[in-house]
Length: 174
Image 1 (spheres, rainbow, N blue to C red):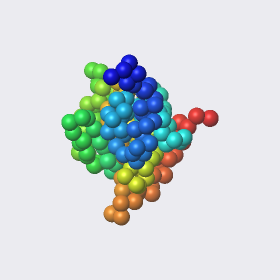
Image 2 (image 1 turned 135 degrees about the vertical axis):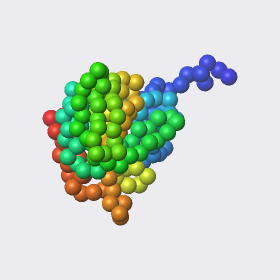
Image 3 (image 1 turned 90 degrees about the horizontal axis):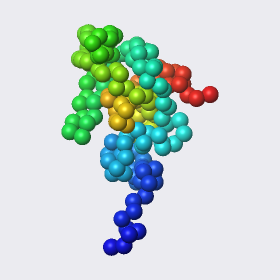
Image 4 (image 1 turned 60 degrees about the vertical axis):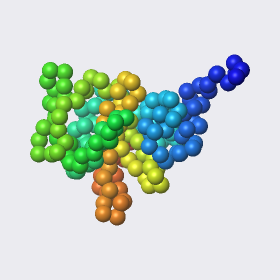
């Protein structure tokens, strides 16, 4: 073994190579393969596939998504992918938490201050268009994701897709 074989490509090169192998795969799996964060994978997606909004837009984005009807809410860790369908309830801030309660199966407490950015993701996932909003933490991982739902034919629900695109487009750099 020589010294050159111990040198790994830089993070971006690893990320690009892993993404090229499975461009429509699970972002977290691509990131793990490249030994980078999911945020680093989102940052190298083709132009327009990931639009990043600042963390100061958390409440505005959450509030707007509350008008979308039932969404797919996902928390993805290395141990579980938890999915819940429901509407996003209004929230309130107290004791360092963003608290969400209501007539939805989606409820609980979010450390809003841990949110570093909000990323609108529009990309192919296993061959189909997928649109989601990722609330990212400082470590480069998704705190949680909100997906545009699909109808009985597995097509994105048009009304939600229109709302996703309109909200995302507010944050596209000029």
